[in-house]
Length: 375
Image (tube, rainbow, N blue to C red; front, side, top):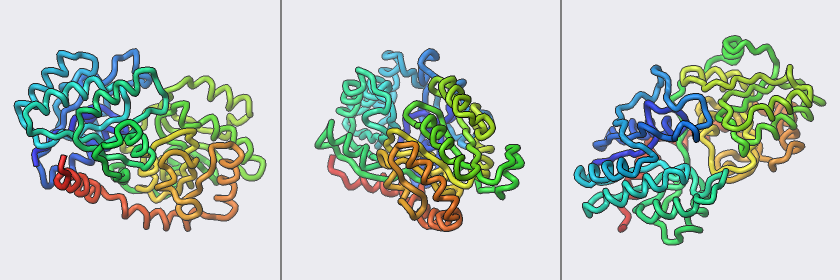
């Protein structure tokens, strides 16, 4: 099959770029595949991070054509006409934000005029966590021009069906992020990160309001009444960082929290997960999370709030804990994890669960879905 992946990808950075790189490496084994990515993903004033470009030593260095300008309709038309002429069998889009709806929708509309090319969207979100007035309109514009949908949680599938009841959709869970290498011994990782603590919990990834870091900080104050735990926070702030630092100071937790607000290079990710006893996802809302599948790669248990599709991967009392997004429940789960010494038991169960989420399985089922669909 002749496939084009149109998405964030190398040399851009972040979880979606990682996802596309791994999907490309799996699909290229049996298909002709090329990647088209953004030369301008966001206008600089809309991008909350420090840089949109990945490091030169990025492990997801895959061949890509840097062509798409997310805010230039003339560019969308050129890309669409190029794909219409090229006639790929399938264009795969990775969709996470309605901002890209007009761009993707226009490209798809033009490309499909060759009466050959089909389009598939891998949906991270349908309705975003932080909503804007144009979200539904932009999403509907794009999705009305799509042949197939892959949803990575039942929550996303439900959102899709609420907008497009007849959508030709399939549920496939997020594969494990296997690109960050293998775990290193815990003490080696802690020495690398200059962490001297008996118990370490990890919050990892871009920091947005919906991800609930403030909730975790508040729960840590409760935890400290029973056991001594260090919180390691690793990720860039995509929301006002001062409110978190003010909260830490207010609660007197300056010596209990380590924050690295830089983007974590791929080759260093293993140290953060290896240093931790457990990964904590205190999300206030979610669809699914790639962070769980990084944790799975390193056989790390997860304590998560039971929102969106997180409960489909984290099984309460088996490979982690699920709680309501409340500070008291989160604190109780952290304390219980340590007092009942669940680390080794949960880690063994993580290994068993991880076998279900291979890239080989994901790619095969995606292609089978397209080939067996009538649309």
